[in-house]
Length: 310
Image 1: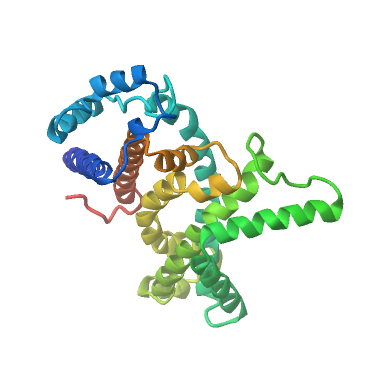
Image 2: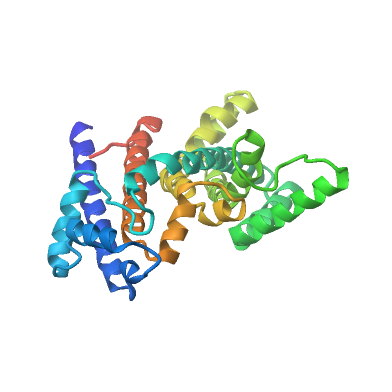
């Protein structure tokens, strides 16, 4: 187990290095220069940034400086926000995105397992047909459309009752988090529902399930101890990437609902060609995704003792 863990950590470090290198190359291939914008920085700030990051040096030397700073955990200073480090931006705004993502993944995970198991138990009957129709909608409709419709529905609902039942936008209370988290987790919940349904259908007619029924075990015990536990394994496999994707992928939802998360600053950085913020947040997102995949790989062996991590 320890050997496998170390092996996965080394693979994770190599993956993060590749992400950082690809991001550096991509950003230096994009036309434009934030330091050339007169409104972006003063001449003094421009000179300090060029000296710190070697912007007046060849690209390879810039890459070495960038990787050296990255190895020390220094993502740099924003090109467009005076005296603000990228580390501070991540430290201040990632908790907001993480809170929203945790609520979304709880909604998606519980809903996906519940609806997937229900559709498998009622295969080709009314609950299965209705839920799968909703699942197809959840997968097909983009998140920005769902976010806009949800916000419009909140406005109409508040106007109908002539009171603020739910906030339209903003952040601060659980009521601000409720609708954005549901919108953010909807697509993942639909995907997990389909995955859980397929896995459950393979389990319900398995030999060990028939044996448990022949022994007269209660239906609830068969469902929880035999069917659900085995069918949920594929869901756990994709749960790590899903957690990372939801936690770091709510850019549109954060923008629509005016949530001060990290995704909002990433979008602003792209619009302003703020290289350090773009590269810093991209590497941070990539490292977080790799970490979650490793954690899920390790947990997978704990959930199913039959799995051997070789």
